Image (tube, rainbow, N blue to C red; front, top):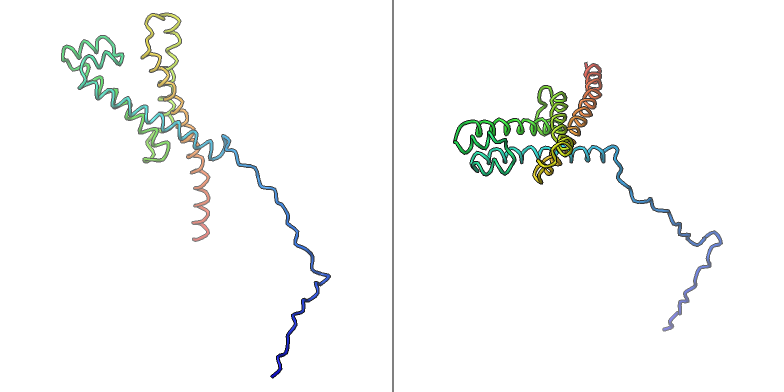
Length: 200
């Protein structure tokens, strides 16, 4: 019985086969977020949330002052007549605290409405302008006090003015956010009306 030897032959390389070339595609540079588009909207939203946090903190301070007593009112720079009311146990101090806390809560609600977290409140943009003006004026009041009566200034007054300033910037951002949302809604409404007309 004869064994036939099979020889392996290598096929010659075709002249049409060319070596594979590796091409290096340049990768795009990392994207830098600039203050436009979504980046700008996120920045404004951050300032609005900051104003909401400041307003809620103010609510907690004024409600806590009712239970904290005269020392609490005195520490947070309440007028002398309010401190005297807290010591005497009259209604001026607690009613004033509740009123200011309610106003600050209203400010927080308008800021949340600008973000679309809650339903749109009436007179949203005019109220945001009013709130922003009040808070920014409160922050800028530090300048004439520092010039005319520097002895009255305290660390608390300086910190409070800075906080009011950030709150004012936040309410300005809330106004801009509400204006952009209104503009977007105005652009969407005609498109919806056209779609309904075509369907009809």
